[in-house]
Length: 227
Ligand code: CA
Image (cartoon, rainbow, N blue to C red; front, top):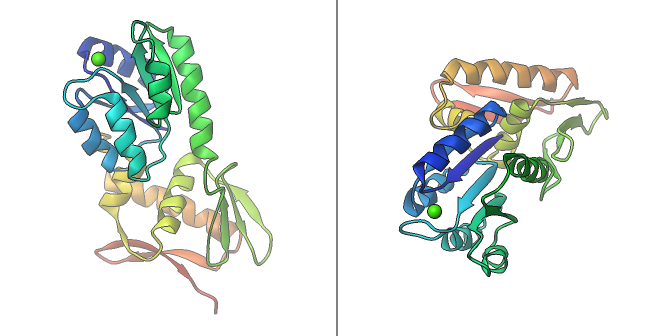
């Protein structure tokens, strides 16, 4: 689960990053609104924690722009207690939840778990390609032809979700590494290959005719080989 933390108070941001990493979240931090908008464009985050009072572009404005671009990533908005109308304005602008500063870490983590569940089990609850179906609510991969199914790990799920959502194109290892592991992770490209091979084994296990093909020197694509 990857989180983008947008918070201009650097000490607060650092402390939150440490806490979230201890909880096994992957976290990137942005300290102003413009950097945040750039980072959000990458579409690699599962949750955005968004402070309202930011230099440049406010948290409200960021939430509005993100939603107007059709991006539904869950947003948890952080507001100061003095900003009384913030709850309403925040939710109006497209935030999914809000938390009033100062807050208890326990409370923050509980909200994140709730939003995270929503991320994994959201909008299009079923994605399909060729003879495979991916159920986003429980990470189950099934083959339509023989009704066999298997549960995926979070990374395997993300790989297949990304490949299915972009099935008309070849995805490079770089795109996959950024999408699955994020910008600042130390994931090497061979991590991509390792997880590709796990994912292929799951496809083989359910005897799907949909395969992940490596396109030499370019990347990967899904192919349905009905022969
Ligand atoms: Ca602030």
